[in-house]
Image 1 (cartoon, rainbow, N blue to C red):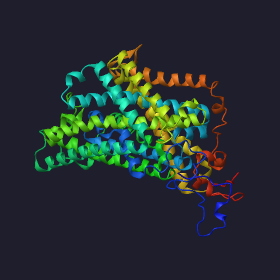
Image 2 (image 1 turned 120 degrees about the vertical axis):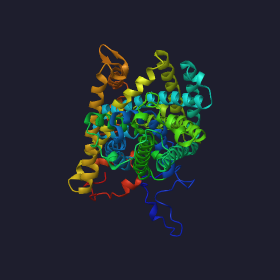
Image 3 (image 1 turned 30 degrees about the vertical axis):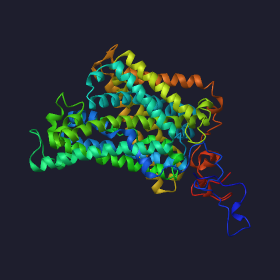
Image 4 (image 1 turned 45 degrees about the vertical axis):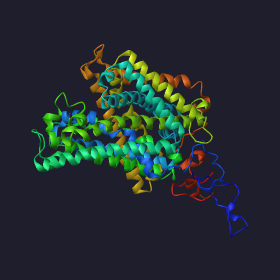
Length: 547
């Protein structure tokens, strides 16, 4: 981890042969802990494990398995184009995450950034409540998905059909994930390496088998020959279907931003997470587009949209393309994909709480750390308890309620992605007056990303209003809309109540508002590289002077 400049000019020590380093490195066991450190183990993971955490959070095998069929239903053979088009706002938003992390490399991520730019109320609601609520719902869902797939893989389909049994086993997986997360970031990273590796092997194996079958004339009866028009988003001529397909594609990229939560534990907390964000999203794009092309070419749109296939494409097409043995590997990969996402949530969510607790936005108990492992043990325990309670509670309401709740997550994703992209525009606005690259990369592109996310929010909300959406409604309005908007309204109420309880944070004392020209107001979340580029009394590239 980087360290802020020492008040004593150590570089001027009189012993030239063994100068004391101005910034002790994480490898030096005698190095004093950064005063802004939260107790996390700095320098523990590099770019590879960080990318693995980002990929695991998305659960690419599971996301493709349950979403691909509905994208094909919306746009037909133009499915690869829908994945390409859905990637555009994700890339623009990823640029905002990259630049904001470089400026404010804190494990709280969007919570810190939105608070810094728009104030504590917006920060707690849009950077705290909204992503955390989305994550809790997703956590409960993937715990159940992992349970169901793993039971099916082991020939226990009868147990998988029992909601209470599934919920109980899902709680066991939540406890397992919490235990691994509490053991340390290194163990979590290595487990994710194995789980994401299996997913990529399974998806790669399916693609190779499908393309080979097409080349040798052994594809299914409804196979279609890939063409360049598959990558043209306007070739289908159905704009309504295209928008629906792109919205679906947009949300199956979600999760990559979880890797920001480990930024303070990377070898370079300014650079590594930002690079990992871009690398992760590009890897997802490649696998999604190639897998979609392979699936549509191998089976055809009619087969994929068959009611028996549409909701779980890979589990059906996998054995057909690769044979029964490797087909079972694909089924296992889908289940472990969901488990990997659950583990990533167990790693990322408690670190967000650690940051919130550090700045007074949550009770101080959330900052309690294991002295040797460098993990937020209390926050991890609370995460496990709350996730289990949500899993059991939603299951008790209805066996299908978690499925409805996960559909509402799209509203929350669009809301906090839009807020983060807009925060980048506002924060770096002073630089855009003098730098063309800053205008494009920190202004125009994130701004477009924010607009597209707002559009996705509006389109999804209107779609969910329909009583036919997901087949359930209340008072003539779709149940999914009630769940999504209800969660957001509850968050506003909770935020209003906490304003009187957490005065230090909501007064703006712990994270004062500002932009790039006032970065010196918040040195505790800025790495020493940012601060060391400033000389007292000397103007910086952003026309700022050091305080």
